[in-house]
Image (cartoon, rainbow, N blue to C red):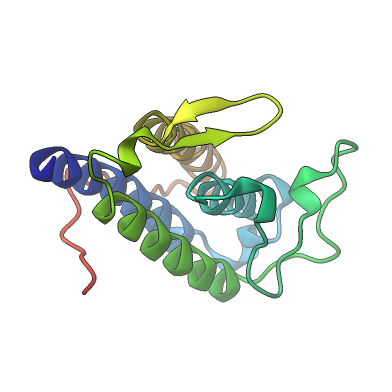
Length: 162
């Protein structure tokens, strides 16, 4: 289990580092484009949610809301600043780290169950990682096409927490 936890964290952590890099390289004049700031927010929100042990009681930290659950696609009431999303990214990175660190024979069998998902904890971690990576590709495409920059590739993370 130690090897699996290490692999999952080094790779998921690398994906989170790549998301952070894409956000950091986004110029201020491009930040307020809905396709960029909102995609970054969407990605972090769902990363946080999918890392929840109890999805039914999920609530994002302030100032964020549950607007992502709105079936009509209602956007948040304002554009979130880059600094706010970087703080939310760090909050979510720690949540993912501790979720993976807490994996053992028992917790790996826990289920993430919603109306349309019923995954083991490990499968949910992989699903979450794929979702984040999908949006990083979109963000980097937007950056490359519009401002000729892109976030960096990260092979493995070197970040850890207590």
